[in-house]
Length: 420
Ligand code: EPU
Image 1 (cartoon, rainbow, N blue to C red):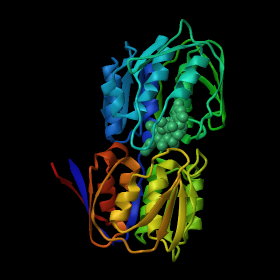
Image 2: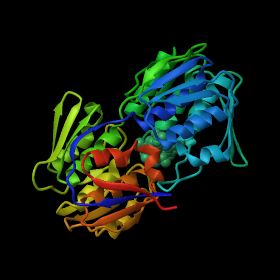
Image 3: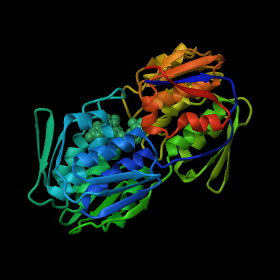
């Protein structure tokens, strides 16, 4: 099992290029199941989650080849079943359900269960499938959805924490091949949903309203093959921006979409971080002393839950009290006790973490618990005095392409070591 060894205290300097978005490419790869024709996706990041999604598609019967940042999928003949071992390993694999239901009118997949960040139910996905006329049965840990012919319907996908990203993706994908018009209200507005809608439209789907809370999908008889370039990863871009601020460095981020990052840059600006835009390039540096800010995670266009941990790492370095409230996932604070091992003073009160920042952090061995928590530990390690060892970095390899290599190119002293 690999770890990162970080010698902290070096300001990051230089330029970093952002990779394709993990959370866009996963549902887009699943969408290729909607057609028997070949699809080609470009800008695909080299991540273990992407490889795993490729394996799932292959297991379902598709031909998949992944080479040099492009993936080609042809799902000529597929089966409509996803086993426990497939779905359990990656929560995101639930997005095979919508395309399988749309294409085959039946699907049976293992219920994914929870993960370290929360319970992660799929009730809203199932509500959407039911609105398209599917019958839903849950038995022996599996969920089965079947329909004689999917028909358009109206569904409200708002839940306890707002809309659902993969739920919207799933229902939208199933509805592309349903008879008639489907309207999704309280649809997720995330850029990854828009990217998926664009890919589906390139396949011949008729989707309008993507990026707004009302999605209208007019079903078509069949979809065809398409080629698509995935959007850049906004979470990766913001992670480097926060790392630049945390290390008192200056980093130019290229290939990002600044228009996907308004909430994050607004908060960074409030915290005293300078972000200058020149086209798609962003230069990030500290403007002077950092200021403590309160952050609440919200669905897009609000501050993303996928950056809560990284922002918390930055606030541990900032004099004053910052209240960070997590509104999307109920237990996404696994990084708190590990940040405390580096000297951070953080208390959890219900959905909020109260960060008393400004004490210098000092290196220590820490354990990564999930993808974004791991990124926060790396940021804290880069800013801490002395050596930090981040264990279990396979979590990072799921969602950050070559994080250690990109950080090294920015001057960080970070090494990957095999601890097995
Ligand atoms: N929810 C329900 N019922 C449902 C579905 C969701 O109550 O049927 C709740 C969840 O429990 C949560 C909230 O709705 O409280 C939002 O969950 P959502 O469904 O939007 O999450 P997701 O689609 O499963 C995606 C990303 C996550 C990201 C969230 C929120 C992928 C593969 N995953 O998950 O990414 O945090 O949206 O933006 O796209 C990550 O990249 O580290 C990651 C966890």
